[in-house]
Amino acid sequence: MSPRSPKNVLLTGPPGCGKTTVVRRLVQALGRVRLAGFYTQEVRERGQRVGFEIVGRAGQRCLLAHVDWRSHLRVGRYGVEPDRLEPVIEAELSQSPGDVDVYVLDEIGKMECLCPFFVEAVRRVLDGPAPVLTTIAQKGGGFIAEAKARPDVQLVAVDPANRDDLPDQLANVLHHKGAGMSEGRGTMQTIDREQVAADWAVRGFSCELWVDPPGQRWEDFTHAADELTRISQMTRSFRHGVCAFSPGAGLVE
Image 1 (spheres, rainbow, N blue to C red):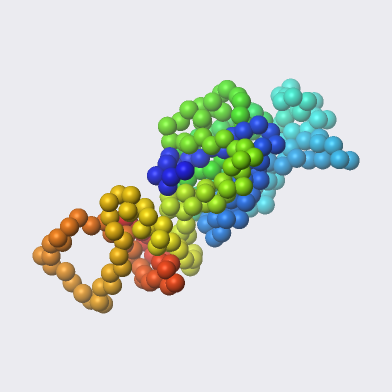
Image 2 (cartoon, rainbow, N blue to C red):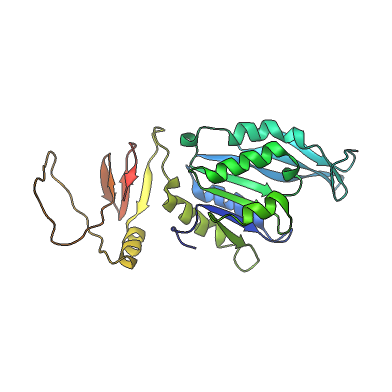
């Protein structure tokens, strides 16, 4: 899985393969990244699964499906009331693009896709600038098939052989997509210098540290070789092999 892979990542696989576990561990691995989204969890009564609840990252929740509901919209033995989903999706997926580093959704499933508001909101964030990490049903037509067919998504099958390593791999990819910095929030972005050196080596560049004296001006200066530079409109320093940046306008490579 490469940092230069498509912006959006879709995790798929059969029920019970570990998709939700991967997502929850990924959230922990991402640390201080600004996240928005939701997860779906089972509702159990007396040890039996009776429904599904949607929980937003900001704490809003709604009951989406239940075995006792007599709704004409049904998935398996569950009655579904998709309109209940709208307040959670409004709160999580209608934020300004600059306020979110990564959207984490669990899941794009048959129940959720019965809500037109959900479909439009997810389509909008997939089109937007922030990376989206979402689980998605293994089977299904409509928006499920549409999302999988997008050119800006990478479909990753979760199985027992890869699910333990995926959270760290995905966190690394999302950080490299620029998700690691929360602008204007007083946070720090840390960049692994060894990882930068490895990435640049693949592209034919070495990686050296250059410190300009304060106030130094370079006029009519021509470098002897092509250069690739990662710069910042902020203070930059290396500590213990890690490059740290204080808040500012962002990074440019």
